Length: 228
Image (cartoon, rainbow, N blue to C red; front, side, top):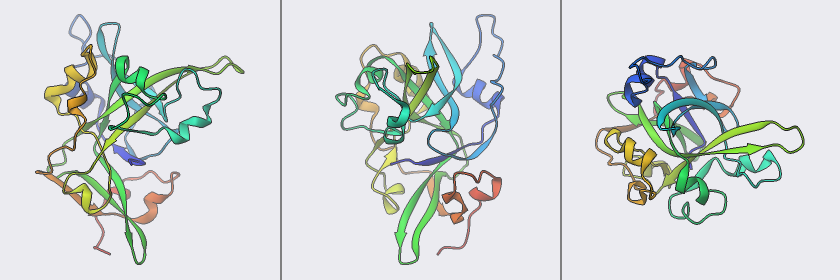
């Protein structure tokens, strides 16, 4: 699964990576809550890029997909990840997989390896530090009690590549920039993209167990520590 990740991109990097320009070729204004994040946790808001009304946009959505038919928001704790093997048929995700796919910007994700001294967190990303994108789905849900409309997302996971597999048995699906348009716009869901990303160029290193706490969100969390 993917239970924590980082987002360190600037707004300019988001605009350039995802080509977020208005019809006049001007960049959109950044969301008010757009900030660097070192430890994004479930139910927190984070940026996602989606296709809406014929154009790409970046919006701040809550992590943990709430299907439109859900009776309450508690289901979000169980829907932070959708499995690539069942996303097309699972009731919580199948509608979004057909029509509401998104990209989740990231700079790295955390996974935990079981060790004699307890679970050790690792940060997984690219050796050159490049930003990349998870395959995601988004949904709109209305709270019948309060009338509030909530937009949420999930991250799709798949079997791991050689780097992630040394630590955990799942990894997020990573979408290459050359496939952005197809993932966001294809009429038929591009299921062939739901595969482990090639391990070449990727790396994983141990980080502080402070990342275990969702309340902690600071640069030191992504610093390499001595191998446990």
